[in-house]
Length: 394
Image (cartoon, one colour):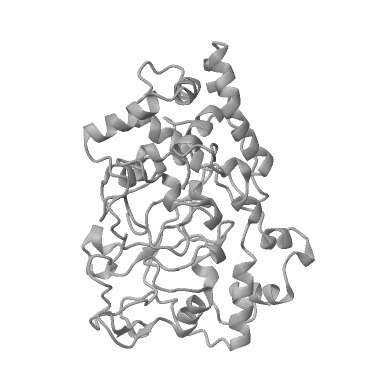
């Protein structure tokens, strides 16, 4: 989505308030959403029962940054999905309201509208609406995140919102035909609508491929040729391809979802391909031994600001990530997770040693750094709408 398109969504917050005050909330909510997408980006798929509207997006933005959606008022969705880190968690381990550290790294929400599955390895979470129940209510998550596990917790959160006239107006504008507006079904619909506007497609690499020759450095240009396999045996693009640099995509005109879960040889803790107990990817859901260590492929957009890396955040830098892929897996020499991932019998066939020299690895990192979209990260319409209100923020 272009900056202009996202700013329109931000402006709708004020419009929603005015529409409600004038008794015309229904006309505002029925205004259709116009996608203004980067060149080459398809229209995202949107559930039929949750159509996009400016008022719904504006409400979702408020809710995304509101700490009152957690049981103890200590964290919001933005606490783990911070704009400056492309809506990932940055260098600190993710933790819920109890302080317990999450075993999974926080994925970026950039272009999350195009994901056919959510979380790192859940084969059945197909919509943002379904995914939201995990962090909010504690469903299918290994730790307490926002802690609204009981009906009493949820009702208390809704009562806090109902006491804020900004929400009375915003819910009326977003859901004018609903009599009982303060329900988590509607909270989740608004959150999902806002997240679908997080479209990233204006990085220096995007500008370069659209004809701006000097938008990226010569090193990044060489790295791009390595990444896409033009001059080397690198196979990065096999899993990170297409407009979103991910093999996992879904959009409105796509007849079927592109879904893939892969084992990249990050661990081999027992010589049979296992990953650490309780964090074995797709296997946790299917119980198929062949699915151990298989995780979904994230987008590489904004990857330079989303360290640490991999599903568990165990790889600290981009250079270290490139080393793992260059070696065809990771060797852990000692400790409880010791093993040679390069020899894993479960790793994907495309995960093999690339034989890149040091200068080629540096060029590949330069290309990955060129995927940082500052317009997206700094877009005013994706930031905290009430930065001076202590109830709102990361």
